[in-house]
Image 1 (cartoon, rainbow, N blue to C red):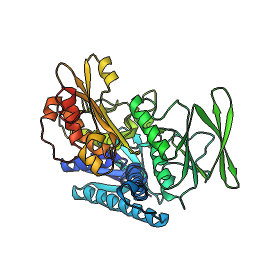
Image 2 (image 1 turned 60 degrees about the horizontal axis):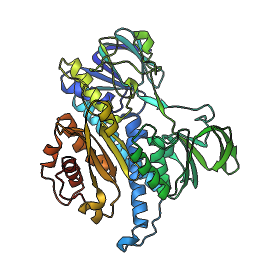
Image 3 (image 1 turned 90 degrees about the vertical axis):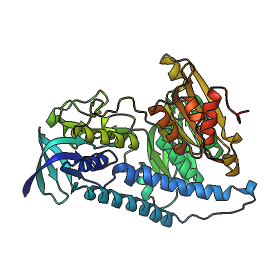
Image 4 (image 1 turned 180 degrees about the horizontal axis):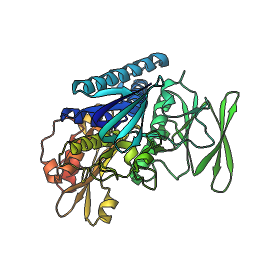
Length: 467
């Protein structure tokens, strides 16, 4: 059985890029249909950002409660894993219900099914019951996201092999966990389970954590994870996974060919993600892809076909939910005839380890390579009253400033609430503020945000509280 209908804007994928594009287009008075085969909110809300941060927050509470002897607090917390997962599921449900309300409030039609393009302005939506619906559209937004890279030696249909998605449905907390990959997903998993008492080993082919990141940030994260008991095996490629009576055995190989076998209860694979373009059949539209398989887009998120847009992970790195949402707004407003662009917008990146690490804009080395003469201002949380009074003195704020113009070029934050502090610095970059502008703004006391003020003042040699 097949039916047909029409819409002005078809959005394929209801993740943070797709649903934001749909809602914004609806706000602008467009007739919008949002199609997704899975849950509203996509991977981020259902299997990634939100559930992982919920569990990380719980693990942080557990760890803090059990390690506050310096404050005179002694506790031995007990974790009921089933109840914890139930609470986490409730957080997710609240947010997915909220997405549905947002869409309906602006008239977005929600369709459950898998959409694929069959012509320039036509798609077929296959519903879960097998029925199909032909949908004619004027404009389309592809927001199909990404999926985990599946190494051949670690098939995802093996019960002992976990993706980041599988973590949120584990029957219990593993006693031993081996993580393949020391990128941000692997490190967040290592942080979560080490705080819950799991013996964690991270295997990484490169020579350190977070390949490509600033050296000081990488060393800081590694040192803190090791203090939590996480073991690292760098320069090793995971080559085999063999079931054992007690769990799984993972074989790794170093550059010189030496093999090592490690035992674990479970192995979590976090070696990257790849864009999902096959389900929507971009070939039927003649849409061009990059060499890495992403949909090629311009600054308005328009593909090689003028009436088709792409946002989020499928449109290229960085694969971050907030970047996807920003692109969703740009695509919707461009469709509505507004002059907007992703050009010159700064996308912060955060790793929710302990401590958190956040960056935005240029590092000192990148600033110098770009032709600037950079100076760096720093403020350690060990000199910040709020950090000390909260028992969280680890970390720092570091800002990169152009010496001549005093413009803020970039920043790096390490600390318990780095993810919150980096927002002010992103505003400074997008608004083209100077270090003097930020340093001259009165910040509440005592707060962690004062470290941002002090770092900016340090860059212009006017800091009061930087030793």
